[in-house]
Length: 230
Image 1 (cartoon, one colour):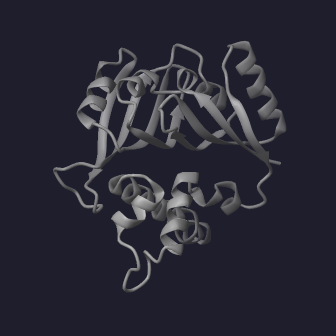
Image 2 (tube, helix red, strand yellow):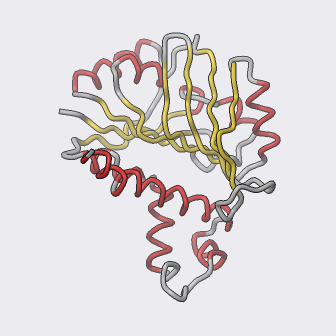
């Protein structure tokens, strides 16, 4: 039976450590990772920081082979010049052991990975095919002196539970606050700015969390069900 693990991982043992050090205010949410023997290719959203600094840091990283911007939006979710979030595809060499390679080696899947507020850690959710794969992953980590803190281990009973609807803790907090604060009411009881103030985050950060949270919910509920029935 599959096992879902939630880890806290130092940036140095995961990915984008040098880039995050250069742009610590940027929040990164990895949506998918393709890992091979020599290359790692994450697809991720970036928001909340200085994109010029962030892009320069990505391209200055000696390990990075390719950087491709797939999407960019303003704080209304529309394509615009004033970018608030971008979706990237990055390819870099993986000649140093890291947790991504350990996950790939046991055929596990990174469901979600989000940077902490400081940019020094990642909150990572990994689906292991069984307990044996998890044990092998632990052995790999010990062998290569990789550090992580296991926060939660459990066995999901169905796909929707497996991905927990694909919503991160920050996105869930934003969605619940928006719901209880009347943001989704017609007319709205709170504006986006007022709601952001209650969460002590910026308006842009809240807008990005709500959009990604909605998108993840659709992918794991309505869209997931349509795909499963086809």
